[in-house]
Length: 76
Image 1 (tube, rainbow, N blue to C red):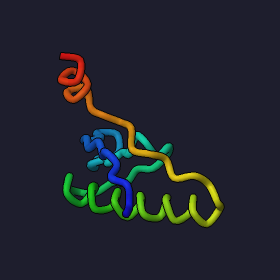
Image 2 (cartoon, rainbow, N blue to C red; image 1 turned 90 degrees about the vertical axis):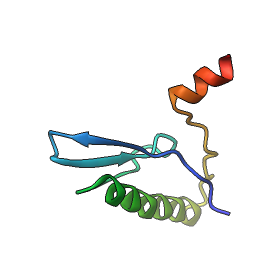
Image 3 (cartoon, rainbow, N blue to C red; image 1 turned 45 degrees about the vertical axis):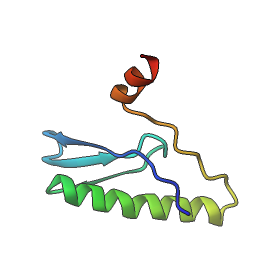
Image 4 (tube, rainbow, N blue to C red; image 1 turned 135 degrees about the vertical axis):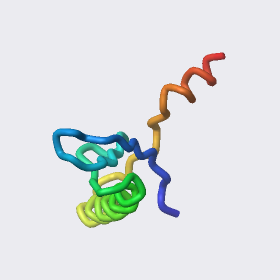
């Protein structure tokens, strides 16, 4: 089963597009003209990233990132 990683999506005025960033996978991100497109492209990037790790015998990182809203709930 493929791990489920959090994806942050935000608008970049500098790049003039939506960015989808995967905090648990260093340098793994994608972009799109809509938030949905950016997420789809990020999912492709995640799969390729994990394939590359596996091909090189590197460990697959466990999903750890939690947005601040979840951290606040866990502390309550």
